[in-house]
Image (cartoon, rainbow, N blue to C red; front, side, top):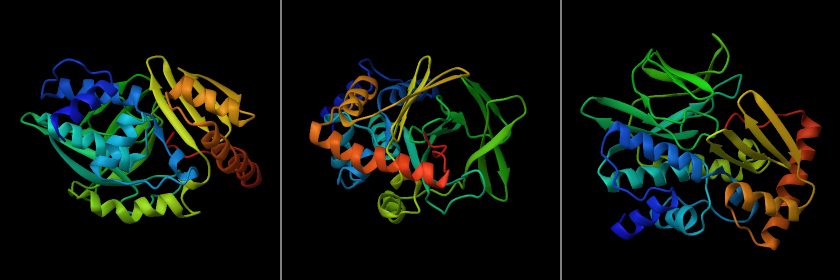
Amino acid sequence: MDQQTRQAYLARIGIRQAVEISPEGLAQLHLQHLRTVPFENLSLFLDQPVQLNEAALVDKLVRQRRGGFCYEVNHAFARLLASLGFDVSLLAAQVFDGTVYGPPFDHLLLRVRFDGGDYLADVGFGDSFLLPLPLLPGACSHQPGASYRLASTQGQLSLLQCKQVDDWRPLYRFSPDVHDITDFEPMNRFHQHSPASHFTRRPICSLARPDGRISLSGARLIITLGADRLEQPIGDAVTLRQCLKKHFGIDLSGEQAALLFARGCAAGDAVTSATGSTPSRRR
């Protein structure tokens, strides 16, 4: 990533001053990324292939001011970190769906190394930790809205989240093995095209806010403020377009909004009603 691209990326996430190559600097970048770059899968309903090369990612996240799912936003964030001088690697995780763990390479996350220890970074999971986690099994991190800890089992680490007292639930598990982005391509294709992927069922768009989180799931806008949750229906493409622009900074054309609503929102809600399925925890 060249200097001009790096500066444009930093401006995109609201960073205009020098960043320290330290855990504190990583935390600043991590939080700003989560509050400015949405976790979203809208491309899957807009005939836009998800490409993982740097040029495509920069064009989408920085120039178009869009977001993406884990393979996009975490890989882009990794390229930004590396260009700043951070020691960052790609790790692969299996996401827990409430019953079983998904396949290998179901999720991409990051390890960032410092002399004082390693940290886990993840700006591509939706409702998860806001600040990087020390890669220390058993260590507990109390953050706004939830607590997190890593549990070690048979050579793997499981990320656990607790939103109520002593109610620890797994989000995903991963190994310390380092991977290249090409290792994630088969699952990137799966999540774009397979009916078995939750990403192909309905549009998802989610952004952390200082007071909570705001999310689009199908034809519903979900606003979470602490323990309070408000849902608002989205009844047409015009409202959808206005919602994406106002809350997520995503500026679709009228034609794109109509296509997204027809393919994703109306159809996605019909599938939800028929099957009784609920949105993924990645939201």
